[in-house]
Amino acid sequence: MALYEHVFLARQDLSQAQVDALAASITEIVEANEGKVTKTESWGLKSLAYKIDRNRKAHFVLLNLEGPGAMVAELERQNRINEDVIRWLTIAVEEHEEGPSAQMRKQERDRKRRGDSN
Image (cartoon, rainbow, N blue to C red; front, side, top):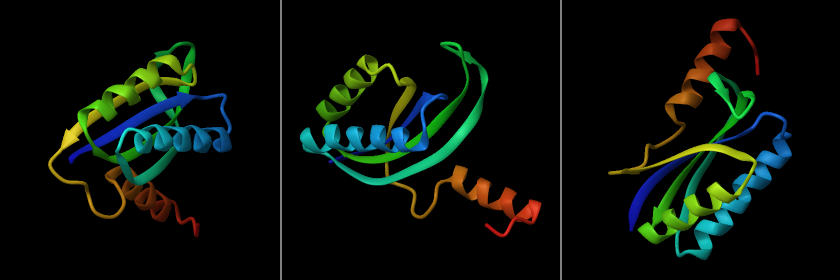
């Protein structure tokens, strides 16, 4: 089975619960096409470098996937149809990163720097 990282950006006006439901629907698409989601990370609402479809911010979500190429084709087809997904990127990787992604480590580092106890 091939390994992939799939990052999608959801519209800024969605709630976190709606973003989680969107990630769950993507998981269903992957599993229906003989694939498997090994990790899901929500990176939160972040500012964009430029406006995309009148959005200045977006919810970022990362999914680590295992499966055939046909699964990726169907996933990207569904992303094109879904109005809540404004951008996505799927890349093939040699192996998945263990533990939290670099983005999650950065958020933790920033939190410690500010002195938050969260």
